[in-house]
Amino acid sequence: MKTKLTGNVFPQQVESQPFSLDNLKEKVKKRYGALSAAVIDETFQVMAEQLADGNTVSIDNFGTFSLRLGMAKSDVKDFSDIRSQDIRVNGIRFKAAKQLRNGIERQEIHLQQGDKVRRNVTTEDRWHLLHDYILEQQRNAHTHQTSNPITVSTYRNLTGCTDYTARKELAHFAEEGRLKEMSVGRVRCYTIK
Image 1 (tube, rainbow, N blue to C red):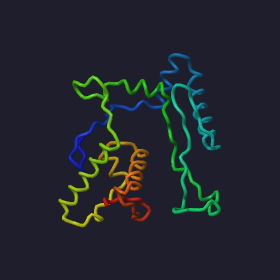
Image 2 (cartoon, one colour):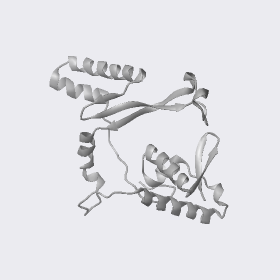
Image 3 (cartoon, one colour):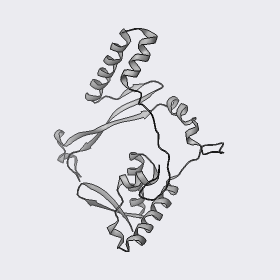
Image 4 (cartoon, rainbow, N blue to C red):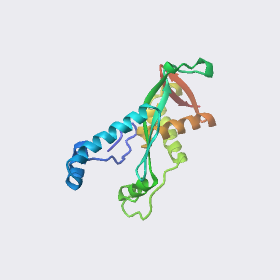
């Protein structure tokens, strides 16, 4: 794929058909019989109930599911200002187990043709990419630097990192003084200092 933001080329997983719950049930049914499909349904129901009760769900050799919580209102500074109705579920986080990560990381998709070892992209590499992108945008627009805010989504598209990494690294750049943090509505944005 080629990103519209920078013109950089990046890989993206392409699949002809996703492996669905029905596919899983069919495969397990062939090995263990018709009752296995009902067991899978019940397993997912129990997992959902446990997550709803605030528990993490850990499956050996696969990973751990947990709730991602957030505040319904922004800029809460004091614990006494928090009410239970102000806390909301922003999603479900999945942390892959080491065995699963190791199995996936050995795949050739992480290598470029001719490479023998996996390439590691660092936070500094992503910073230089972001910095160059901001400067290029400023040159093209001939505008003041604050007119080109960087969002988490922009950073993710630019660098190919996860949402969690994008948020963490942008906050880190702001703490270091490389970026200036600002809010546009409910969206946290960054500009270069």
